[in-house]
Length: 482
Image (tube, rainbow, N blue to C red; front, side, top):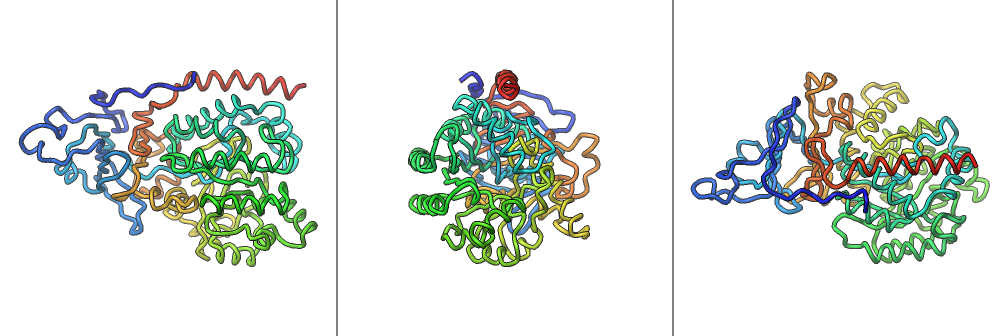
């Protein structure tokens, strides 16, 4: 594939510290864990990320001012003071995070990754006009397996650079998306869109369901890719399709994700057809359950939220997309108070228009303060929880990712804090939510493997990815003009 790049060989990597104090260093030969004397007695690990403020996002909210994370294989071995872990472990490779922040990789709970290639194609429109007048026709004219491949590569490049290590997605040609995501080294929950009209790949819901089953069979058990069932929405699918989607998810024990209660137009349409809200109708159909993730949930009533809580349904909150399309403000503070799991998402870049989870955190915190006229609503630590362990829980992955704890998968990022907008730093939670941006991410490790170091993405050829995106842009423009 033209956008891929072979990873550099593991071993000695040289580099000076950046101005922010974050760079890649290797222990000298005597500190590799393979020598004699005291160093030889250390337990050997693959990577030690050391020297920064560690924000663990564990249940106790532990932070370490000069901490470290020890990694062996795809797992975290230990989290603790840098001096202690340096004494106890001999690392083959060390990432020096001095002056930065070490935290779990961010979890984007809702995306349409290939739609980065439609970024800016239609803006300043209401959702239904945007979808039916612009996006659906543009997809019909342009979306192919190759389009999905290159769009996913561009999205993965953007997400890795912005510190996202896991994302949830629904789109078309999902096998191609999974292949690209796996090569990029990212973790993802992916579902083929099931929709009640001809799509670019599957022309009927029945074809999409059959495709989804094959997709699940191929990818279930993959260390990075979790297959899912993804009916688009209640207003684009029949009752029979929604029930068949839930039955398929149950048969394989995989997640089910769909758009629900995003706009008032959707609420009116479902009420006119079924005399119920979308959430109530989905409950009547037997679709709801603990492995179900609903995206948006903007127009949910108290009764709806009681239903979501009763069935332990998870919610993806997408503040920027909801604001830009004027869809409304989801009652996130109320849902959290009821114990409903809420993760954070960007939605696709055609309606955002970026995949920056740091910006999503900032917007979420400020939106709900304004909506409630309460400056204490949705504090920074809670928002960061939504973007890490809360997002992992929404995807059913919190036993493996979302916090920095021994035994969990090694998904973590290093954020540099030396920029003018980053100094001084008094509170790491406040800093990450209100000051940091995706461009501040220095290094990214996913499943124990470095995918970005010192700002260089190792698993994608950035130049080739960007060049292909510009080429496809010309094709899209030509199709729109015609």
